[in-house]
Length: 335
Image 1 (cartoon, rainbow, N blue to C red):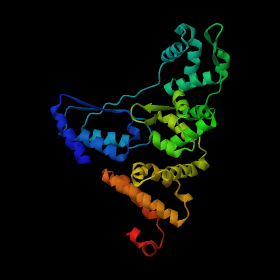
Image 2: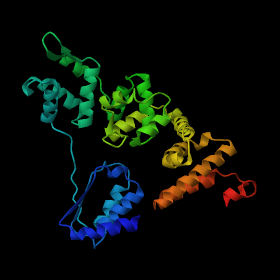
Image 3: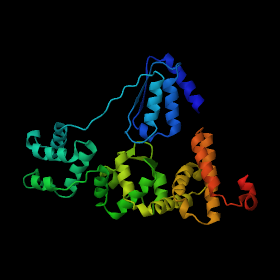
Image 4: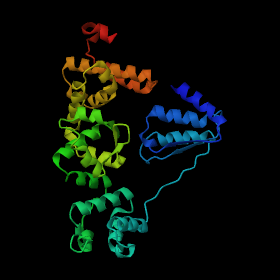
C-alpha cells in the first residue's frame, strides 16, 4: 500500500500544483503519519503543498514535523488563537436577530466566561437557551434575558466538563446513544451504531444531530462527532469504573449481531478494539481463546491493508490471551 501511494504521488510532478488537506492530523495513526512524512520528504515529489491542522496534544504529529524540518523541508506553523469579543458579538447578534450594539453586554459576558474559545462560547450560548435564561417573548416578538443572571451563571473552566454537564441534561435514552457512539470512535457507520445499541436508532439520532453533538456525513450512511472535544465529553459521561464493561457490552452486541463471516470482517476492528479494552473482565479461558481468535482475524485484515504495526499489536494481544499450557492444550491454534 505504501509503495502504491508513493508511486501515485510520483506522478504529481507532472501537475501544475497539488494540494492535500488533512484537518485532523492528531487523530491519524502512526502508519498514516509515516506515509505523510514519506510523501513530504520524497525528493522526486514536487509541486506538492500539504496543509494540515492538529491539536497540540500528545501525539506523533510533533515528532513527525520535527523530523521533516530536520531534513530541510520547509514547515510553516500558524497558531490559531481564540476569537475576539467582536466575533462573539456578531455570533450572538445574528442568532438573536438584534443589532450588534444591543447585545454588547451579553456578548462580553459570554466572551469573558469562555475566553473566546469558539466551541465553548457557542455551547455556553446554546446552554443558556436550553436552561431558559434566554427566551423568546411571543408578545413582543423579541429575545429576552437577564444579564445579571447570566453573569452569575457558574461555568466550569474546562470545556469538556461543560459539554458533559450539558449532555447530562438530555433524556436518558439520548445519553445512552451518546455513550455508545463515543465508544465507537470519532467517525462510525450508522449500521454499526444500530448493532451496538438496544433501542431503535432512527428515533434518537435526529436529536443528537439537531443538538450539535453529531453530524451526518452526506451520502455515506456515516456519522461524525461535531468536534473531538464533544466526543471526549460524551465519553466522560461513562463512569470511570464502568467504561471497561461498557466497551465489552458494545463489542458483544456487535459480535452477536453479525450474521455472517462477511459481516464480521467489516466490523472486526470495532469488535476487537472494544473487547481489548476489557480483557481483564474476560476470565474464562474459553472466552479468552475466542477473543484471541478475533485478534488474529483483525491482525490478518490489518496485514492485508499493509498496516503492519496495527497488525503486530493485535497479534501480541492474541498471544497474551493464550493459556500457559497452550502448546499442549491448544497446539494447532497456538502454532
